[in-house]
Image (cartoon, rainbow, N blue to C red; front, side, top):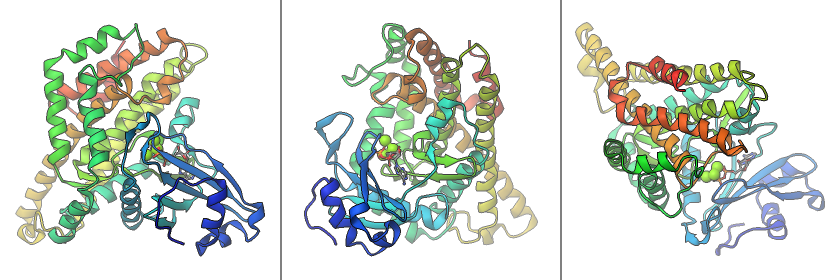
Length: 418
Ligand code: ADP
Ligand code: MG
Ligand code: MG
Ligand code: MG
């Protein structure tokens, strides 16, 4: 079935290809004539097909050799599909049930055949509609704690950890996108930047002149590029979560790399806060979404608290880590000391997460890639108001992370910004 040469797939080429993959005719039904192929990719980078047969459906995700959002002028390596597949395998192993099942991977075609998630929807779309997801905070926290602890050297031996660092280090092009679009471009006059203009012109300019903010952003860029704490998802926004009220799956880890843990946690928190600030643009009458706004802030709190609790528990219950060798702390004094040390470690992760959350928010308002939460607000004055509030909190998180007392201060600040 493997094909030696890459070509972008279409309806006609997908059918014979899929029919040779052992699992697929069973999943779809043998009657190939009744397979229906739809391209549904709404992302920035890849083709995504849903193939439906009489018995079921599969999703085929294929990398394109360029950035779909921008066009063929911006080439991007097909090998990102390999990192996505490799990350999905690690995630399925460490956080079973929280990613789609993988049926097949073809490295030459840069193509992954996976479970069709249904009736799941992209979380961001649910947040725009005002839907509450009772499982989300618990599931995403579990996913992050298991992945970010489990791939760190807190959980195991140096050799597999260093193997992971080596395996993902060549995902350079995708990391570079993050390095430029998250940490640098919003703070300079980059040609692909855009914002709600003229409403946010002054604020965009003031951010480009804001030396303390630029210093903090670049310090975080340095951390992102050099702190090899754990295997990150790398793009863990609410557009990479598909869910129902009772089931949560994380998709799209093509940006996976070994990096600072707070980068993933901050992505989740930052995107929840963008959804929070967008609500005033979605309510039909003022105050109609007040209850939903509070639900969103409660998720910010719960995601952080639950992540912290689960990460600490996994660490406390593990004896295999080659960092903080458990045998050194076996007695009562040692255990007490390690409890303090875990608290110190989590405090640093909290500051990292808050700062990365702020940077993720800023780039979605002033940079190249925006979010539907805000873009779907059609009245520019209304949209700009939400965006200004998001930027105000975000800047505070980036420059003031070290002086935050805790997650309650973050949600309190979000509530008090006019
Ligand atoms: P990109 O990397 O281009 O953003 P994604 O992996 O995010 O691609 O997929 C793009 C879209 O395709 C998603 O937003 C979702 O609507 C749909 N999609 C992706 N994977 C699945 C899946 N396993 N089941 C159902 N829909 C999916
Ligand atoms: Mg995506
Ligand atoms: Mg995308
Ligand atoms: Mg993607």
